[in-house]
Amino acid sequence: MKMADFQHPSLDEMADLVSNIELNYPNVYSPSPEEADIIRAQFPGLTDEDIDKNLETIDAYYEQNMKYDIIQALMEKEKTSASSNASGYSGYAGTELCEKEFWIVFDRPRAASSVKDATNRAFEMTDELYPKPHHQNRADAFRHGVWSVLIAKYYGTKKDDINKGVNLAKEFGDAHEQCNKEEDGAPDYDLEMDYRNNWVGREHFANTAYYKKVGKWPFKRNALYAKSDDNYKNDIKAKTDKAIKVSKSREAVLATHPSMVYFMD
Image 1 (cartoon, helix red, strand yellow):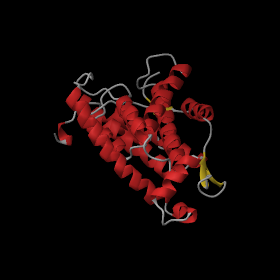
Image 2 (tube, helix red, strand yellow):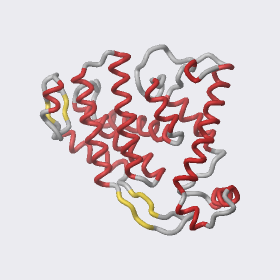
Image 3 (tube, helix red, strand yellow):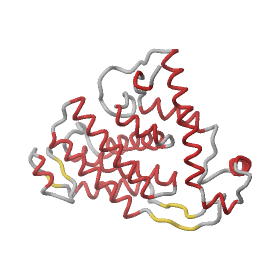
Image 4 (spheres, rainbow, N blue to C red):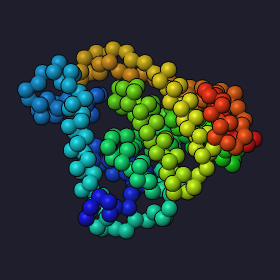
């Protein structure tokens, strides 16, 4: 069986699958004492200082092995059970990942849970603040902004890297919108609204997260700090309150940069 033959898992399924596989690999950036001992044993020629200097390389080594395990798990799943997902693409945690989304989280195995948790939390926050429906209105704008800030936060803090968090939020958010267009026919103006509000969330994370040196590996080092989820919810809500209502055209959205935008009250 080839990878191209797979029906892509849902985000929930991918996150759960990776969570089980992650148990076999140490957390490089914030290891427990037991995990630190595993890393030392697997890289016996390196001192703790050497490990600290090579964390990205060591993490990449573990993630390559995780990818192999993911492929094996997906192949086994495909053999033993038919997928329960409905055909078609409707885009969030409980539905099938589109091809672009799948390869993004496959390439970053530890990202699946970050995207899943951010997705679920963004929907919860939107429901807390806005009555339904949540389409093309302020609620929609808020959801995209807070979704992006939380993806960036959750993955960035996991990797102790602001740019990695921001890059994942951009790549996954862009892929999500492209799949909406390719598979559901979403209009360009709708995509442009979502691109803008996603960008606002990413930028807010990049401008509020910071690093703080708190010790040597394995007891943390140049750790990333960010605001609480509730603070980010309040920040994005304040930005959404100032969002600009525009006509349904890509040009109208582009003309309002850098504000958040929406189409309907």
